[in-house]
Amino acid sequence: MTPPANQKTPNMKIFEEIESEVQSYARSFPRVFNRAKGETMWDEEGNEYLDFLAGAGTLNYGHNNPVFKDILIDYIQNDGITHGLDMHTKAKGEFLQTFNDKILKPRGMEYMVQFTGPTGTNAVEAAMKIARNVTGQQNIVTFTNGFHGVSLGALAATGNSHHRDAAGVSLSGAHRMPYDGYLGENIDTTEYLDKVLSDSSSGINSPAAVIVETVQGEGGINVASIEWLQSLQSVCRKHGILLIIDDIQAGCGRTGDYFSFEEAGIEPDIITLSKSLGGYGLPFAVVLMKPELDQWKPGEHNGTFRGNNLAFVTAKAAIEHYWSDEKFSEEIKRKGRYVSDRLDSIVREYGEGNFTTKGRGMFQGINCVNGEIAGKITSSAFKKGLMIETSGADDHVVKFLCPLIISDENLKKGIDIVESAIQEVCAKVDQIPEEKTYFDAG
Ligand SMILES: *Cc1c(COP(=O)(O)O)cnc(C)c1O
Image 1 (cartoon, rainbow, N blue to C red):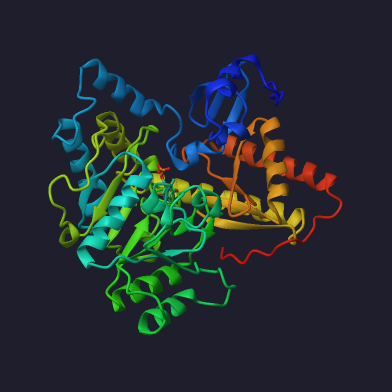
Image 2: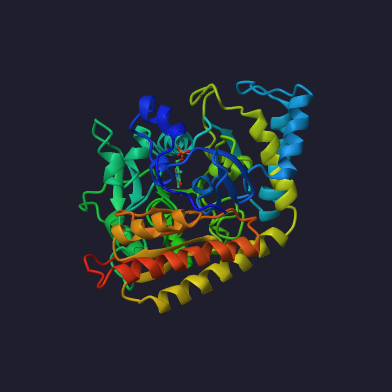
């Protein structure tokens, strides 16, 4: 493998010329990529990279997964429907049947499935609309460091000021509460939620719903404890508030089970899924809602691309191939234990004051004392052939998000690269300044 020079190449000129400044990941990985397979990507110069970014959680089954690829090629060869608005198609019917038989029914889950526009943020918009329309309340409780997308409704529920500041209008209809661990380890923030909802003078309007991630992805791999999630559900039930789990990043196996909340044994009223749902990296999003909440009038929340039939085909294949039994789930949990053992030992080695670990399943991170250090680690890793990003308020968490199907060998290799990047960065920094303390669970 030729290590990337990390310098601008001639083939990058067009991006500088006419692609908007809004580009983001391209800045961290300044190469022109043209091939990918499994957990590996190649740039136009033929350099090879291990992908620990995985489309921000969209490529749980890897790039160009051969199982889905053949099925997809066959479907296209036979002139299967690609676009059909929201009309019934064979591909959609088969996806629904498989999703119901292999995912919902075995878990005793009874939900209606709404196809929204194919982005996560559109599923979040729809979920919040249903909750507001059914309850007649406007307010939605959201959590510190939560990320739910960047269209206005979802952005109101998002914490990050970098994203919020771009809105240009006031973001209304959401009320922020402290996430698990936000106020320190021993403070149960659901008690505070319960208190303000019980007090008619708290100034918090009775909400339609609570929207929450079980593990905050963009917010810095903050893990809500199982007890906190259970307690959150009890508070919601007590006050007649709908519970929306945004499982767009944590779902589809990332934490070990298909849904990230399974371990907590809770029953959300509404669930959003996207990112890895389509399996092949194809755009696809759904809202799952309890049948009694399905009070939509025809076409009230519409969208031209509610029927990405290519994604139905690969989503069905992903469920059939990976979720027909417990094996895949067990594999994810085994790999997750390996990642957390390795990260724990890296933290022990390079100073517990500078780094901590956090995460659940294959959704893990190294929390650095500041964003500068985290950024140095990820850019050094890139020079060594590993693509890995940061997340969190100050981009201070190195976020391990490799495809779940990664080989043991490459999983080890990727973590070895991060370890040597940390070693390199630590050697350069005499003393890491203690700027800020992050109180996070996990
Ligand atoms: C990525 C993400 C979204 C937004 O999805 P887009 O497809 O980028 O609109 C919403 N919620 C969570 C938890 C996410 O990780």
